[in-house]
Image 1 (spheres, rainbow, N blue to C red):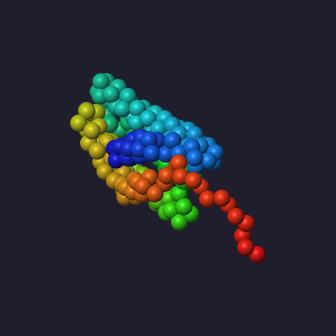
Image 2: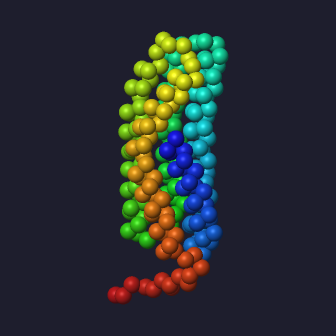
Image 3: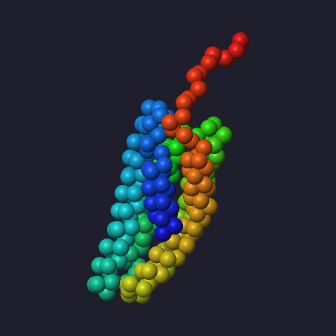
Length: 189
């Protein structure tokens, strides 16, 4: 849940803040297009995993099946969203990479690496929750409980998302895309 809200917030915010920065150059424009492709692919992967689990859960509840029948789909939900998260993180980084000074680019890369590491950690911690899918009959409350517990592990990602939001905001305050760029000079001999 945290990842979904953060992804929505950052992608919308970065779209409004940086898409119009044409003066930043062609590299930035290409990066933004590539970033949106990555964000879209990551969103589709996560959407398919979540949608698949919810549809299977609904069918299992309607047919009175035990929770254990959902383990494969739940495993896809837990592990299958990891590549989507990595694509979303790469998309966030690409959107602003060419707009940032070198020092802040390093911070962006470190935050992105930390976010992916936190996602891996949250995934590993959430995996034992599959054992909660036992012989009880599938009910909406049990599915909601499972999803809530899995979502709590995703809170590990929150500090990195907050760091990215702060980096985006400070970059926005510092960047004037219409400002005159200084001409490059040859280094002194």
